[in-house]
Image (cartoon, rainbow, N blue to C red; front, top):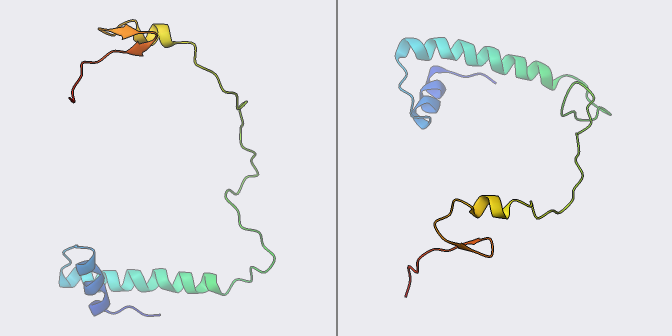
Length: 95
């Protein structure tokens, strides 16, 4: 696949990027080099290779999944202007 200056300008317009003629010429060469590298990667035989999420084998750190009430309701509502039974009291806003 090859990119020309018209394609670079079209992509720049779609991305809402202002590109001068000189920059378009430079970007054409850069994009062609990137696409050439991607084409090289397509030639690699990856049959039987499992996808990786990391190059280092890792296991996720897990914590006990236990349900707790937190035990901090009194501390949380202590600074509230009005609270009742560990709930915040607010003025009525809808009638």
